[in-house]
Amino acid sequence: MTAPKTLLELAGADLNLPRLGDSCLVLIDVQNEYRAGPLALPDAESAIASAARLLARARQSGAAIFHIAHKGRAGGLFDREAERGAIVTNLTPLATEQVVEKALPNAFAGTDLQARLAETGRKNIVLAGFMTHMCVSSTARAALDLGLRTTIAADACATRDLPDGRGGTLDARTIHEVALAELSDRFAIIARGDALK
Image 1 (cartoon, rainbow, N blue to C red):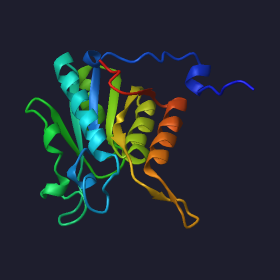
Image 2: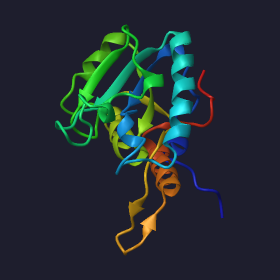
Image 3: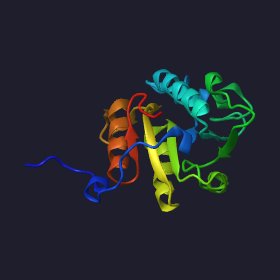
């Protein structure tokens, strides 16, 4: 039996990682909401540390940088006026970096992100952030429809445990890896560790 291949491999797609300097880094929902409380992610801190290293390299390389922040209602989840809805401190956007607020999982839906990316003239986007199975996945899938070439910085993403629908739980790391496997089939190149330069 032969090892399975992704649709991208079967199609002979270019699976080389893009240069950060030629890309747009899109950091999705790296907000305090995921550090504590009902949406705390088991691997949030390690993903934030990885995202901080990635952001530093992206800044040094001249990448176009976009921070996406989920905006919830006042007093609720992702309240942007409260500490819980703030972007984590060590990923605070610089004045030259754009911040896009969204209300839906897909960062393109109801926002001007597509137009802002188009203004850069770059077709490569690198996604990192929270949650792998939700907003990262939704954005990567939409990016394909918009003609963008997507890479996901796997170690700079994380997700949470989910109910399995049968009274049990699927652990966060399994959800994360399955989401990445699904995306690698057709929607994105997966970068591990600090491979993006």
